[in-house]
Length: 124
Image (cartoon, rainbow, N blue to C red; front, side, top):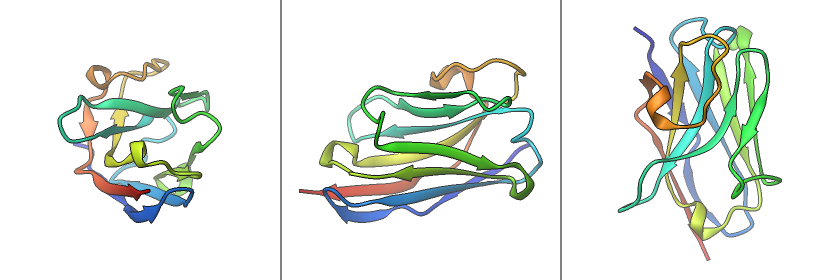
């Protein structure tokens, strides 16, 4: 069983920055695809960014140029640097892991392991 724990959320004004972290309980970042998702109240969970086991990156259009996903395999930690935050970025942010090697699909159904989430609130 893999456990994921997110941290780094908070409240910021529009234009501000936050850096989210996701600590994994095992050395999975080198073999699993890892991703960030978010969910706003009353809305479906949506993909934000993905980093595959081979380092390929994928971003949702609504965060391209503002968010950067990265990982440190040695520290078993995934990151999401969020710049130029907007009120519409508000939501619960989740870290997720897909154990199927070489698969990199930024959809919730493909991810088996999830963290509990960290709240991000952006005020205008």
